Image 1 (cartoon, one colour):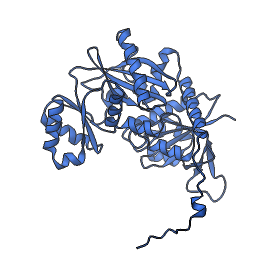
Image 2 (image 1 turned 180 degrees about the vertical axis):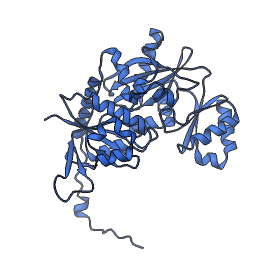
Image 3 (image 1 turned 90 degrees about the vertical axis):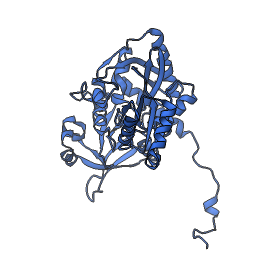
Image 4 (image 1 turned 135 degrees about the vertical axis):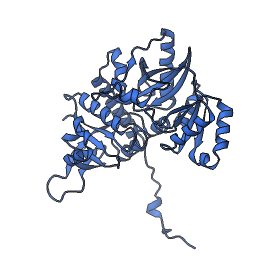
Length: 388
């Protein structure tokens, strides 16, 4: 029998729609001779739906109609696999929709890419592709990510973290502290979002105030970072694990303004269900061979600094020939397959490698001991009531 791969996408994130496109791209690119695939759509309210309709992009134009055509399921542990059980449970007839051997999470943003969903799969005991819980969480929090990059000796732009609580308590003090440390202009980002959502460039104090108010619509904290005057963005993906990580070709995305916006990434060049793979870009990036190798080396170092596995895309900023690591995407749009194609790796091959890495990690975990024989419960006589 062929392994069954559960492709999970959607979720409670501002990047919900992008995840649907990326997820269905992956689903349709899996080698059908090697795997059986199950599409699992996650609603914004945390429900799981499976069915033939969930695998068709045209159905997502009407989400209420889509879920009526699908079966609601619940993943439960099944001895190293995961059963998708019909929910509510059926009194008669078939109770099991499918059994999954490995999960391919193709999700973006808070609540799904940040370790929350990965922790769920870890608890189920089912292998899943991509970064584990810690790397996923660190990669989503821009301040934590930047701190780890700096500790690894990677070049990053100076920044401060501003919590919404501190901002509401004394906005003038937070403004003054940010201006004194960073000067102007600055770029303001929700600390745990992706896809350029909520990002604003501020060139004076009034603009910084408005930018922070905007960022707090999406997150409990914001990153205020020194902004470069006329930066170029160069991206490079990495595939592998700590033992064997290989960089992709470099790209230069084409933006329509000061920053690469959500529209640049997913709308202007992403029509027709192409998502991130349809955005405007130059591949290979028009940079010198020496700069290309420096960026590719930094990409691998960033990947390892966070303990990543699977595929991740690292985004860089250039100020002339000076390179700064901007951020990492632990589940990049379209899984960054378009950055590996120039080296001859087609998308189905990339997915094969992600599944291989997931299963290999699970085999390593299976060799570890998760219990010790203490006899505590067997011999426990103390009861469970508190004494006053």
